[in-house]
Structure formats: C-alpha cells, structure tokens
Length: 207
Image 1 (tube, one colour):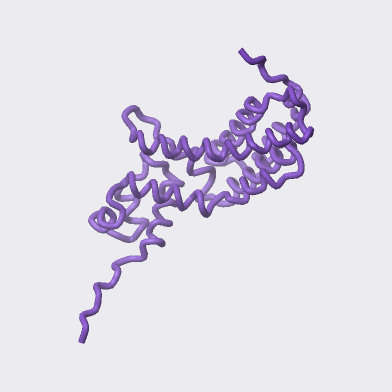
Image 2 (spheres, helix red, strand yellow):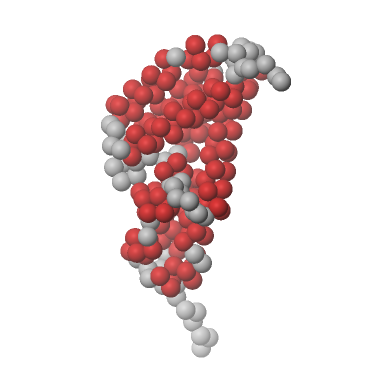
C-alpha cells in the first residue's frame, strides 16, 4: 500500500486570516509572536515553517487585506460620475467601513505603520507602496475629471488628492479611537462641504 502523505497540521489560509486580524488590531510592531501564534492556533516553529518570519507573514497578511478588505471603497472611485461624487464616495464609504466592526476599526495599512527608529525598511516600503497605489486611483479619477471638463483646468489635482486622502487616513485614526459612525460621517460631510473652494484653488505655476 502506498504511503500516505503527512497531513497538514493546520489550515494555512485560515491561519493567515487570523494573523491579518491581529496585525489589523495591533499594528506590525505591537503584534507579538505570542499574539500571532495564539490567534493562528499554531506554535512558533509552525509559524516559521509556513511563513519564514513575522515580516514575511505581515507581507502576506497585507496582500490578503488588499485583496479582501475595503475593495468597495476604492472600486467606487473610478466608477463615480463626477469628481465630487468620487471623493464623497471615498470618504463616506470609508466612514461606513471603518465603524462597522468594533474589532477591526480603521485601516490596517494606515494603522500598522511602524513608529520606531530602526523599523523594518521592507515593511515601511510595502505600506508606503500600498498607500501610493490607492492614492493613484483617486488622482487618476481627478485627472480624468479635468480632461472631461468636470473640473477646471486650473484645479490643483495633486493638492485635492492629498487633501482627500489625508482626511481618509484621519478617519482611520478617529475610528480606532472609538469615534461613532455618525461622527465619522460628519467628518466626511465637513470635508465635502468645502468642495467648491477646494477645486477653485489653482495649481501652482510650473517652475
């Protein structure tokens, strides 16, 4: 009789999701090995055998997060009929998503950023790359709005993009601190209340 292969000791995908939730709740630095192994239901040797390191585990968790969480927030930006609708959608959808679960408040990408000197460069770079990629989605939508005549040609697309993304990141911090859904939606509303003034600010002249 042919020998049977050794059965898997754990469900790798399920363990990865549990790790993602730990990183989401605690950030990269504050998530200890004990936190991760307890949530994943495995011991340290199994974690290293499956993922090689905490850093590599976080990288995989970040990829999973990008593929499964918050997709509706960003997918609605290119599809919005106007630049204003795109920005309003981004902020309102963010407020709704970030306040939806007491254990998963805020954005993993924003809240996981290492804060101490000497933190892993690869983790910092991965988070920066993710933030840049999502920011580019909004920037391209605003550029399209200028090309279509929805925004004036003088609109400072870079400044508008930076402003809206900064508000979105702030919503993440507010959510982590316990802000209610109503408060987050009010912040989004306040940001959009100044839309006409925002888009009327001309971009700086070329050097």
